[in-house]
Length: 134
Image 1 (tube, helix red, strand yellow):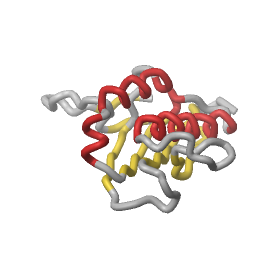
Image 2: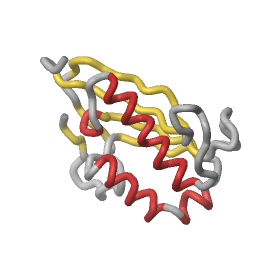
Image 3: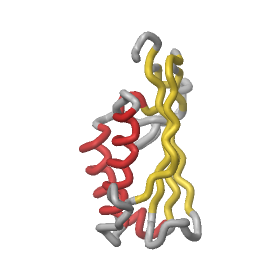
Image 4: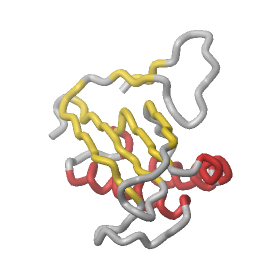
């Protein structure tokens, strides 16, 4: 996996502008919200839901033989920009706990609502396993 950072660009914070991979197998993770394996929201706050949603993404990846280091792209859909901005430090700590210093190409999209109430954030991901890894 190669991080693509054009010459002269300011460094991105918390994401990569692009990633080049030698494709082997690809895993597409559907949007994961902050509920547990029984589809119960244990947290009403964005931070708790982000932690659970990220753990859900990683559980799906693990089932396919992938880990956080294989994530090339992640899209986040969040219902509250103000709550997100206020929680950025906590969200960063959660990210580093689960993903380390791996920052895929990412998009953050603010939406008016999510299908699963009282969801506040939904994460979807694309991962690529290198050629030769089953």
